[in-house]
Image 1 (cartoon, one colour):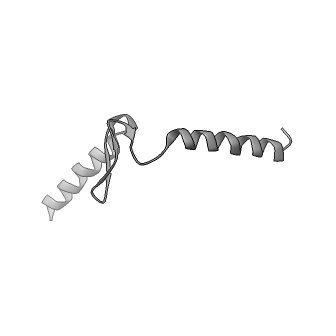
Image 2: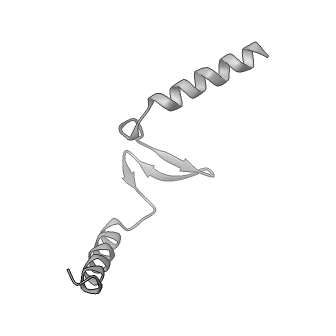
Amino acid sequence: MDRLYSFVRKTAGIIESVNSNDVTDSFVNGKILMKNREVLTLDEEKIKYESKLAMKELAIRANI
């Protein structure tokens, strides 16, 4: 059991010490979602455009 605890602590230490700058690729269920920090499954330009529209609409509703 001590070996299992040691493994868990080492794994937790690695997970707790990394940050977003350490992530270059991302896989979910064997499918690559991001490679070399480029998102492959989302249309980033569309998201930016729709976000700007939503911000404008929110500003109008908030009278700002």
